[in-house]
Image 1 (cartoon, rainbow, N blue to C red):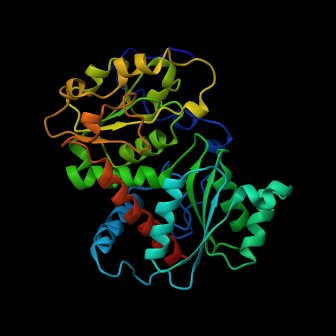
Image 2 (tube, rainbow, N blue to C red):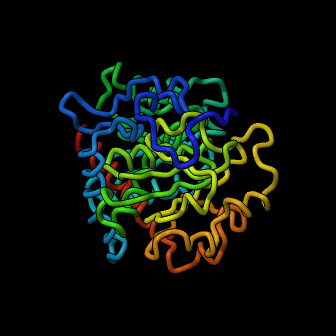
Length: 348
């Protein structure tokens, strides 16, 4: 992987080449997320999503957080609606939070066992979608190993007069994970209130992380003045500065003065070739310890999208420490997914 680019800590070169970073065909697609009136009808990516739409989702999520504290943890906003979880890629945690979110909205939830379904018998993705639409599906929550799969489904539905059926991207390849990005934004806003005064460090395997991509787009859209990508050259995309981030290869320097630190999981399943010498060596240089965290501001918050690799990406003393907000992230994630599904259903 090329290590060319500005020196460590150099200012970003602007946003003109954003779509080329992490690129591929999915980035070149136009995101059919908004209807003719600018209302959100699908959630496919945070890239290009207007700030007022993102803020609207975060605002809508706020009252949903308290629903978990009620004796009856339900509201009737999606009563009579059918939500299909189409997970072509394993993720127990994300699927479970979507299922809880939909059920708290009073929706009927159908989890498809994709491995045993018709796609394994040769049926195409769009044929599967068409058959489920014929069963009166209202919302598809889609996770797929191929970048652009949720976009393809949304475009197909729109092109065939089925704009009343909505798509939520639950993660596609290395491209995007917008609800994770939104719950991270919600968490940062909850503890820090205003994005316009913050320095946020995103640490680790940025190259393979759809979480990092979504969060960076969200942070820059909401006016965060400094977003830092911190990691070894082998785990940072070429031209990552074009996303509006500052690059640091020295973790201590990158953490200096940060208000929030987002640790990323090492995506071993997506790595090709030897990008790291060893897990121990990675932890030595890029694992978050109390000693490294001391470089950040005293009231820094520590986040991780999960699942964590303790002793590799983060030390247990930090993960379980006073500055960790990793478990509240999970709680906020349910509220954020409730907000997304209630908004797109209302716009149908």
